[in-house]
Image (cartoon, rainbow, N blue to C red; front, side, top):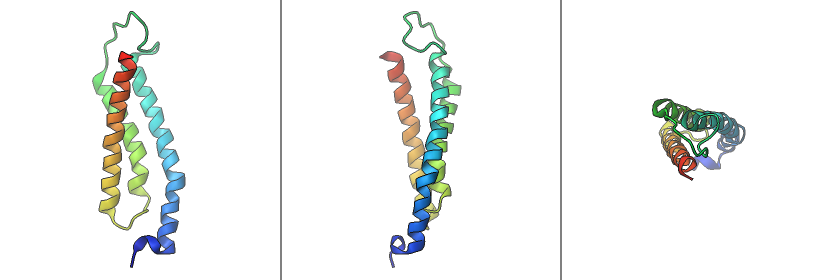
Length: 110
């Protein structure tokens, strides 16, 4: 029997509707803090930007933000299989961390 056809499975999947926005907002806060460690308070667009980028702190903040986005995907039982939830959450963390790095590089060079 297909698991997603049962009413319990649909009810479990509905919990992602409230859990994902919480993770996205918390992750967004960490992504924004990482821009301060990367560009400083005045931003990367200042012509005299002799900034020393803090790669370690920026990476940790990006990773924490990405984990905050991916955490609801593994904690909310939208799928019975924990392996499926773990793979989707890990993929989300990797994608959001990579997008964060790309965004910071574009912010710095544009």
